[in-house]
Image (cartoon, rainbow, N blue to C red; front, side, top):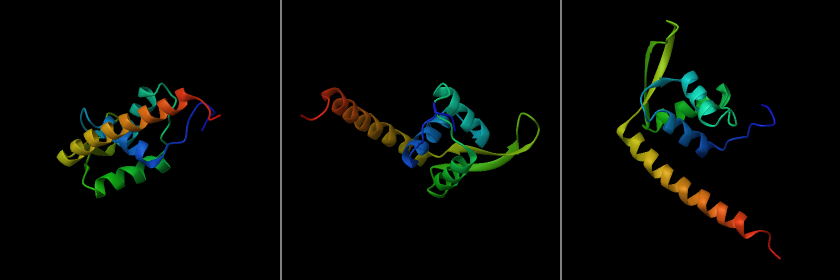
Length: 113
């Protein structure tokens, strides 16, 4: 990981994965590429983080997976949001908005004196 990349906490990874899948199914590598592209290379989700997160979200019923062929004609597992995953995404987006607004307020206030 380069200096420009940030470590991601589990909830943030989950939110990014759900967002990446919100427009339709994708295989794992495409999810990782979407996150990197959407953040202009600032955030990288490597295999050791991505695939456990995908399996965790699948176990929770927020995404489902099926095998298919990639654009390179290789076998790949494709992930898609379930209806409960879409509901969870909306919930997580609202929670993120509250969280990021609170952090922004604290940072704008400046140091305690």
